[in-house]
Image 1 (tube, rainbow, N blue to C red):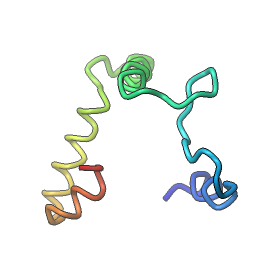
Image 2 (cartoon, one colour):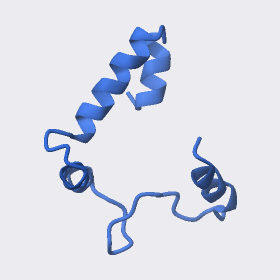
Image 3 (tube, rainbow, N blue to C red):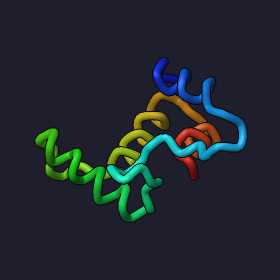
Image 4 (cartoon, helix red, strand yellow):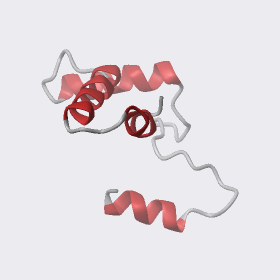
Length: 79
């Protein structure tokens, strides 16, 4: 886990919103909103065909090729 994320989780107050990716308005993304924002980030990074789904699929493939079990892949990718 990235150290900054670990620190945020460790210092989060119990009972507060545990959303870590927020819109520019400080609100949690909707599923569609996150997908659209991710595409924007990909375009900014000169990856015009990038998408959240594509990254998830590539991650699943890489995990499978590295020997991860189906259940491990499901746990990591949120399936």
